[in-house]
Image 1 (tube, helix red, strand yellow):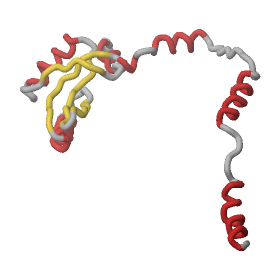
Image 2: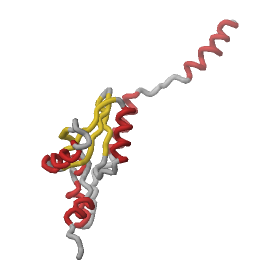
Image 3: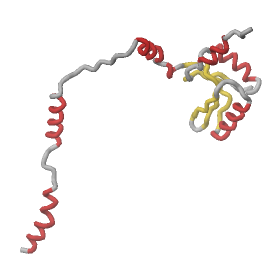
Length: 154
């Protein structure tokens, strides 16, 4: 008799916590609830100037162009070369890019090959092993180009 009581007190509580609803029933009921909501329409309204700005800015983050590579090696040496380049006060930005297991130090964001080659000639005086690399670049800094074409005031 005591064996039956021990069995009833130990096994019965674990059986009472078992799930009785199958997952298929839950999925079916949630599908029915979602389907009963029906279909709707969402409309966005924006001014023409906002639409033009959005349309013109598409693809700016996927620009292809040229950079000048001046170093390839371990991270600590690449960082030192970058600091050396920045210390020279040159105008183009310096980018560290990982090419496993080493890093490359690349200079500038040039839209055209001719623009990059012109700067390459200048940089080869300081970095004789520099060369062009085609790839992803950042969008151009328009202030740089505006200042470059401005006529000096008299």
